[in-house]
Image 1 (cartoon, rainbow, N blue to C red):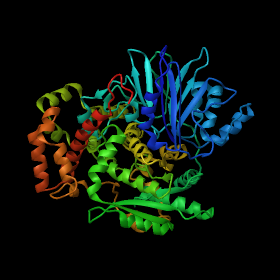
Image 2: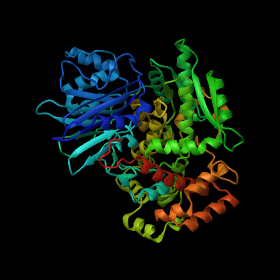
Image 3: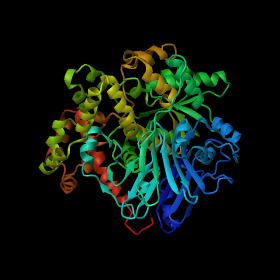
Image 4: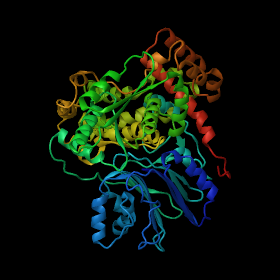
Length: 599
């Protein structure tokens, strides 16, 4: 697990070392164990390493003596690297160590840009082929988008630059960007940027399951690979058990994140079971809560899961007065607005994981998307002809009428003319239904292809790696994904298959409780004297909003006043999302590097 970076341009000079050092420094938090950047005329390739597999080996960029001119860097884990190494060794390749990424140059030598089709894992890979006559850059990410890779292509000079994180990419000289005009509407309508776009003009993200081929001076050519084929065996519990055991093996300390819900509870129970069967030390579990009395606390449910699984449980209590600082840090790490109130909690949780000596954490992310766990899915299935609109409305941080009420006339007209991200999602769902997909399949496809990587996985990657913690996701491994998609609709509606899998593993209180996301009690904290009020007031000050020209300051003030008189979750989420967007516009100004500067 690492942070990676690089650049590729035709006929350019060698990149300045100071510039590359600035790029690396902005994501060094995710790779504190080793740092190296190689460069030459028109290219650079670098890595900040978090040593997980073969900690004593695996120096990046990866190079093999018998394949001069082929270099690779890897962010992530390749779980089938031992199998690949054996097959490649049989073809005459030799490797200096047992690190997973060491197989990449040889795999590319055998299969060319199709090498990623042979990888089982979570990964973002950059590979440079500098051999005469075949010079090119190849970029690839895993099928689910667990490891993001951000790109900038300059059409004027033909250069392409990339990095694991947006703030690092902005440190490259010549990366000229500005916030997208529709970013505010996208945040309020869908909570974050979707598709290949980010909230910044000029910066894209490689889509899940994609490989990009970059020739000297040309724009990246991106193609989607087919999903990795696998044949899962057994029922849901068996398939998940196999993946949890596989991902629980590491050469560094492993723990589990336990929210108190079904998904993380299943992962916790199966990981603890594996530890007992292998005579490993007891599994450590982590749960985050906030000091004081706040509604919707899951701490008791997390303790029940931990007791049942016999883990060493850590209940991390954060001071709510720290929220302003936590939110600023999360926005800086993410590089774009994400209106999910879970972000400060995620950051604080992985801070505690690292401070307690753990490098790998198992999580339950991805289960809702694959097994139909969201209430919005059930509501859409029962909504009749307007099901797509019902689903899209449920994604929003602010309902359409509220958004249009808050917008200035100029911004409302701009969005009406351009179209909202919400409209594009609705159209995609309707098109899928018209093409013959059932509604649940259409929603699941959208969730897994676009929303999961953009809204959840980028957040999880950036905020875990902010503390040099590798988050592993058993639910998103190919066998579980294939199994989930093969189930009949009834079994993957409301996570029925997962409830059956957890019947003998989890406490009845956890199985009976209604679904509740691991999040922040925003409505309660955004109240008179609450820890979020001053921050929101500052971000939504009339002077700031008038300068932005998109939100009517008087109507934002009235919304806040009404919420303080009679708090509601919807108003709180709208105010929170507005504040996150305003904070992001402030933070991103500090991240941008003037043209000609190296740091």
